[in-house]
Length: 240
Image 1 (tube, rainbow, N blue to C red):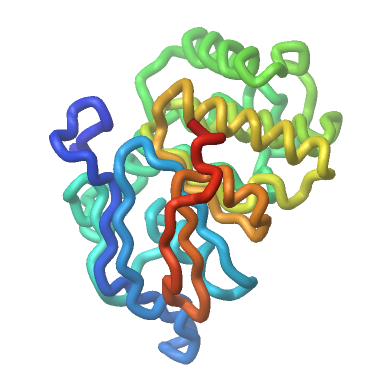
Image 2: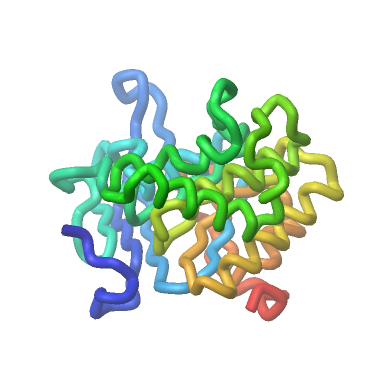
C-alpha cells in the first residue's frame, strides 16, 4: 500500500535518478538521464520547448509511462515496480490535462464521479462528493449539463473537480491553460494555486508559459530530454 502525505515519514514525494525513456525501439530518446527530487507541498513548474521531454517526465511521475532506465520513486517506493499502478493513479494522483478529457456522453456530475468507481463509496455518496467538488470550483449550477454545453474554462473546472475526487496528495497538470483564452487561463491558474495553498497538495505543472511558471516555488527547465536548470522562482512568494 502506498503511503499517503499524512502517513509518510519523509517529505520527499518524488525522486528520479538517471531516468531515461526511449520510444520506437530506442530511436527516440525523450528522457536522457533526469535527476530530480520533489518534496511535499512544493509547486514545481516544468518548462521547455516542445519535444523536450517535460510531458514524458510528468507521465512517468503519474505512472502513465514506464521509464526505460533509471529509478523513479514515490515516497520511497518504486513507481515502475508497483504491484497496482492503477490504484496509485486513482488514489494518490490527480491529473489535469490540456484537452480536459471529459466523457462527452456523461453529464458534468457524472464525469466527476468516474475516479470514485475505484473506491468504496455508495452511489449516493459519490454523487454527494461530486456535487461538493463542483461547488468548490464554482460549477454547482452546471451539474446536469454535458461538456459540449460548457465553455473551455468551465470544462477545465470540471476536470479539476474530477482530479480531486479521491482526495489525492499530488496534482499533476499538463498545460492546464493551453486550450483557454487569456481570461479563462488566469482564472484556472488562480483556482489551481488556491487548491495548492488550501489543501497543501504537491503540485507539478508542465507549461510553456513563463508567467505561469514564475508563480511556482521552483522552475525546472528542460531541453533535449535533460534538466538544464532547477531554480527557485523569483516570484515564488506569490504562490504561497
